[in-house]
Structure formats: C-alpha cells, structure tokens
Length: 350
Image 1 (spheres, rainbow, N blue to C red):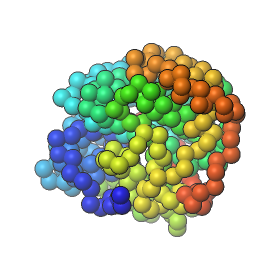
Image 2 (image 1 turned 60 degrees about the vertical axis):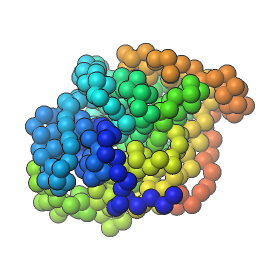
Image 3 (image 1 turned 90 degrees about the vertical axis):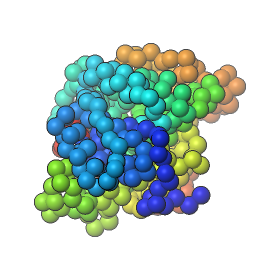
Image 4 (image 1 turned 90 degrees about the horizontal axis):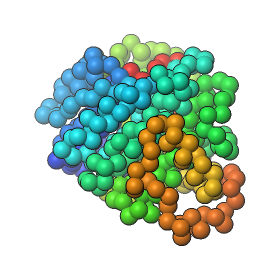
C-alpha cells in the first residue's frame, strides 16, 4: 500500500506508548499518533517536561487522549516501574522505543553501571520489552525499535555487547548495531513461538532543529537559527518521526522489516533491505548476545522469547557466523545518517 503520513488511518480505541516523548522525534511521533484518535502514553524521565509535552499535544490536537509515565532509561529500577505501569493499561497496541541518551560526555554510566549509550539505547529497552510483551501479546501489538543509518556504513562484528569504543559516534553506532541484532532476533523468536507481536526496525533519517516547527513549551523556535552542517539536505524532526509512526500503524508491515527514508536522509518512510550483518549474524553468536543482553538487563527472557524453533535455526546454520556485505539496493543511495537529536544533549529527559 502507499503510505501517506499526512493522512493517517484511524486508531481510535488503541493505545501506543512512545519513549523519549518530550522532545524531538519522540514528541512529534506522539503528536502524530494522537491525531488518529489513539490513546498516546508519553514516557520520559522528567515529570515537568512530560506535562509540557502533553499540554502541547492537547493544544495541537484538540480532543487528544494523552497520559504520561515517568521513565528514566538510565535506571533499570525506573524501567521496571514504568514497565509495570504500562503493562497494567487496559490495552497496549505498540511501543516506539525512541528514547536514549545522546550525551557526548566520556565514560559516563547509568545508575546500574552500564555505559550510558549502551545502557539507555539497548539494555533498558530489552528490560522494557520483556515487561511489555505480555500486554502486547494480548493485543497483537508491535515493538518499533529505532536505529541509525550509520549501522549500514560501519559493520562491526559484535561478539560482546560491552566492548568499549572511543568517541561518541562509534559508541552510538555500536549501540544501534546491537539494537538491530536484538530486534531481528526478537522477531525470529516471536515468529517461532507463533506470537502475534511484530518486531520492526525504523531509522528516521536526518532531523534538524532548523527545519522543525516550533511547539510552545517543547521546542524553542530560537534553536532554528543554530548552525548545523546537515541542514541543507536534512528534514525537520516532525518528518523524521514518520517512520516510527508507520511502524506502529501500517497493517501491511511484517516483523523484521526496516523502515526509513529511501535515500537515507529525508522523505517518506519506505521498507529498506535489512542490514545483512545484523539480520543474519549466525545462530550461535546471536544466541550468546541474546543471553548476554537479558543478563545485563536483569530481565530473563519469558516463554515467547525462548530459542527459536529448531528448523528456523537449521536454516540459519548454513550461513557463516560472520559479517556479510549488505546487498546494494535503491534504498541505500547515500551515506544514510540518523540524527535523532544533536549530539551533546541528553535524550534521557525527553
């Protein structure tokens, strides 16, 4: 089907949660979901910013149904509390895992001692996913993960998710590489279990403040004047939210798909060829990484997440347990970066 992000299908009666929902892409994804008539739950660290974001959505979308949950991705205790609150909703049709720190500070850690980027972008999301799966299974929901186009350019072989790296962009891309590995393995295990839940990957392209509409109390229009080398070929963060929104709403999507702009930078979200090095890492290695992530998150995999069916594993066993070169497609015609927020700011408080 042709997807039109400006004319979204009705979702009245459904409930969607968005993490990192008080600024940037997360805020605009929540605002767009609210236009469908769905109940939208904003999840972020700051109660004050949650209140401002909810008020902004109600102004922009008259009649919007919005609620909030405090979620600090840098604290697994907070993630568990938020997970219980979200799982206790009357229904839950999907979650957009958008939040995560974008701090460039060196050697910072979460409350649980994990590297900040890995902890907030991956480990916290594993714990939250485990907490929400029973509710999502009940309602046939979706888990939409957020990755970056940098993963297509730098193809590390991940054998230990805690391997340290130097510099923000390498650590950020490493965290998103692990995100993709987890999202694909989650999809395989859900399929093998016959679960109605779909695990879908999204990348927003490049979103900059200079092209983002102002929102009172949420987005200061003065930031539109900030110099940014990406601005000439980027999009606003409202447009960058389109992929995440489609991942939750489009009934034609299947688990394991990767959504994002065709040229990797801006525009309509389309299905892209998944990255081979994260979609097909080899069964032995991904099993080890899966176990490691659940151990780090303190959230043992529940029944639907037990090892994939033996036949499914045999099909993968024929593939080399190494990085394969992704096939060339029309969806990768550029360097495909993803900028959910300007590095140096923390997205944990969104």
